[in-house]
Image (cartoon, rainbow, N blue to C red):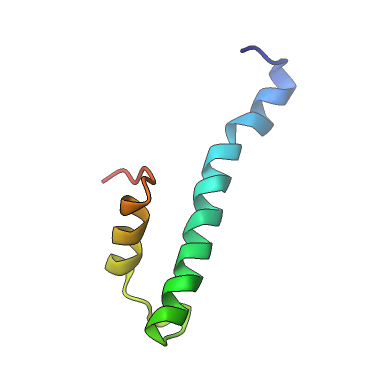
Length: 59
């Protein structure tokens, strides 16, 4: 696939936006399930859930 140079900047940021949205939604759902606010959610729980959903998380 090819795109004009000015369009490439917009295309390049789409995958991180998908991952950020999935992380935010997963964090909200896990916070509700665990009866805590988003700031109190254990990050390890979120990371585990995202990895089990197939999200790429570099170490």
